[in-house]
Each structure stands twice: as structure tokens, then as C-alpha cells.
Length: 162
View 1 (cartoon, rainbow, N blue to C red):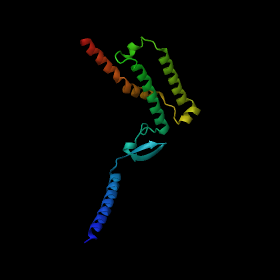
View 2: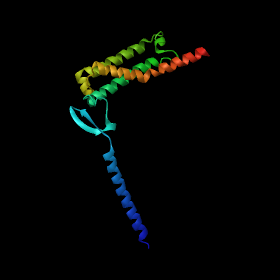
View 3: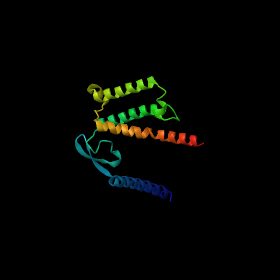
View 4: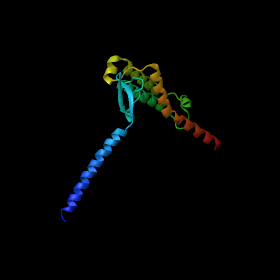
């Protein structure tokens, strides 16, 4: 009688382990796959691993350049938007801040150097962006930041009504 409990426990652990392995194998079979172009080759990858540029033949360097550029543009816009939590970005330009404009120009210059000067772009492992890709990064940056301008507008309207 004493041997039955350890035997049942051992069998349960064995069956549980086999069930987990079988479930993992079934999940791998069920995982949605997508065919993308990476480094000029068509490869099949899990759908959740798709990145910007996979459909049009982009690569890791292009994706890195686009993400980096988007972050730079968004941070510059955020600096201008956050000058006032009430007035619009355009209204806040009346209060000149030459340091902010100078730093923004310097950052944009550094971004262009990183993207388009070959030894530096190789060091950072980025590639040059064409005008439509740069436009897309600016659009995404603007969409991610300028919503706050709508919030400030609504805030001004509510205050004017009160």
C-alpha cells in the first residue's frame, strides 16, 4: 500500500510533463506565420515578429533608422508642445526661446549627419532614409505628440465658457 502513492504521483508528473510538451508542439503548429523580405530573401517568421520595412524589403538598419528618427522628431515636437500646458504651441512661439530653437536645430543636424554621413551611419548601424520614409517618421512623431494640442484647445474652450 505504501508504494501506491509514490507510483501514482510519479505517473501523474510523467503524464503532466508529456501533456505540456504536446501542448507546446501544438501551439508551435498553430502560430500564425508571415512571409516577409529580409536582406533580399523571402523568409517565414512568426507574425508577431514583423517590423517596419518587412513588406517592402527593409532590414534591421532601416528599421533602426526609422525608429530613431521618429523618436528624435517626437522629442523635438514634445519640447515645443510642453512649453505651455494651456496655450497652443503656435501661441507659445511669441515668447522667443532662442536656446530651444538652437538645440532643436543642432539635434536635427546631428540626426542628418547620423543618417547620411557614411562612416557615422555605419557606426550607428543605420541606413539613409528617403524622403517618403522621413515623411512617415515625421507624421508618426506628430501624431504621437500633437494630440496634446487638442487637449489644450479643449481646456481653453472650457475656460472661456466658464
